[in-house]
Image (cartoon, rainbow, N blue to C red):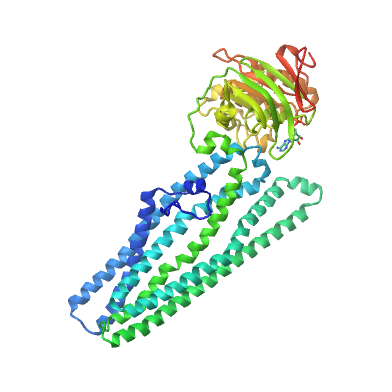
Length: 580
Ligand SMILES: Nc1ncnc2c1ncn2[C@@H]1O[C@H](COP(=O)(O)OP(=O)(O)OP(=O)(O)O)[C@@H](O)[C@H]1O
């Protein structure tokens, strides 16, 4: 285990602990400011206690003046240093949070869509937002307060020992008792609630999101009231868990206050005894009584920090579940966290599949004995009955799914060694239901090539047959709606093709582009999409195309025809199935 507290997190996946590590200068500056500010707070109590009782003895005015200046210095120092501590430690935490969120997101990508589809959207959102937020507490709410409290408590006890060893002993015993009863006991009491809170929160988001997304279906089937009742039940469970957590917190605070009282009574008794023995001047007694109170002000962060460790651990294991859910180890980028530069337009010479078996994680093999070769400029049609495995093959070709067996080589290199990002820069996918962001046509296109001028975007829209969007609606500012619901199925497919062409993929896989289009329009749309995709660009190159479809395709547009049936891919002699 590392000795650097920034990296030490019992029970936290080391990859996540590494991501949740703030940079050393800011972290240690935060701790230093924290300790200095706590020291000023205790010094303030110390000096003002002394000032009040010493004044009663009418010491020389210069002595009093010196103490008054000290009181002011501690008061100003406490506020200024506290401000510095907040600034530095929050700056460190926010910088770390930005790295952490990006890091977690990058590790989620290789699992999309195959493995992540097993986690609900609400649950995933809760892991990505709330759990990542909880994970950032590790330096800010665990290590920093623990270090500050322990250093301050130890330092003050040693100083007190110089005046009255018995008072120092009383304070040390009270702090020990508070540490055990206020720290370790609530940690145990909290553990169960902490372990239940995050999954309950995820279930609640999942249910709410589902209810809002499918309100129309719930209303249509008269099930909205049941869904509302379920939402109420989940909310009540959440508040029960929150209440039990708050009760433990309240009892802990009570225990701490009681121990602060014990420390004061102990100081009066022990200090009084030492005073009678003439160990120190009488004016110091006020200091011995008041200082333990301000030590406890600082020490009260300990139970919160101890409890936060459990929250961090539970959040880390929930995040690790989703970043471990896929074969990240197979993906060089995901495994190392390094991101090799991928050229914008990698070359493409050949995609070769040999005796490949495909399937979804934890499911049976969908098809095997798949042999396929794709070269620049070629168009291959893959047909198959519904459920034969066309979408599974498409997901495997762009490495959303890992193949189970066999060999897939892109330009002579094993795709597992290349990594998903590199494969997807070469082979683009136009899915059955292409994902469009609820924004404008422009925003959806710029995703593929961010710096493209409007004129080029409009040219591309015309090229894919979306003249109507350019001319009669709001042009590039046309809103596409949630999942493209303001566009027709054909328009969504054309927009997806425009995006793929803008991205300049050397090869494109179309997965049933006409699945959501009226049958009478499907043939024409397919011909249009295929002819457009096959047109050479300005540099004279046209992408290679693999088309998964059970609609008719003119023979002239297809070089080879393969058929997926009975769990295997067969070559069909005589080109395309049905012709114009
Ligand atoms: N995300 C998924 N997770 C697990 N199994 C899946 C997933 N998607 C599809 N399958 C399963 O894989 C098998 C092949 O389905 P696939 O969608 O690849 O067939 P298809 O030929 O594309 O069918 P269709 O023409 O109806 O889209 C089916 O048994 C299906 O249940």
